[in-house]
Image 1 (cartoon, rainbow, N blue to C red):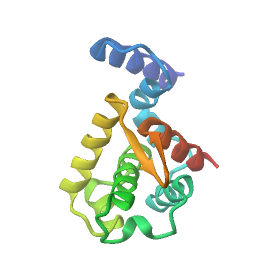
Image 2: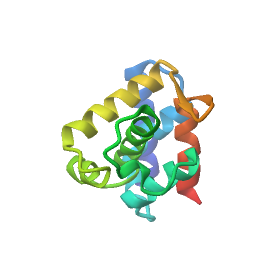
Image 3: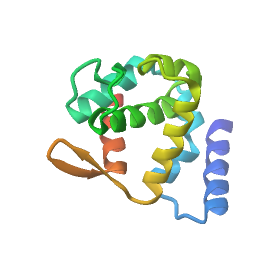
Length: 144
């Protein structure tokens, strides 16, 4: 009961501070820690697999040294989701996704938040999808 009450207070606080209406994205943002510590502990490999499945990338694509946007942008989304849904440290996330350092993960997380706020689109194959939609697709894969 206390966890639910704390989650509601967190959601109300974030709404007041950001002056945004309460919606699914705000709830996910506000309750990220609660989700991160839920019963089912997600691993970095789970996030990796979910992003690859959602974007139809080959397994291991996000761990390559490739810097093309076709791989780097999905990798940034995976890093963002890894911070949101796992208890992994920045350095662990960077190591998993191609041996990057913690500052790369921090920069990726910041960039994805900017893209979400600006309703940016991500080129996925021959189509463009809003970043929020790509994140939702990957999160659905995580819940499977």
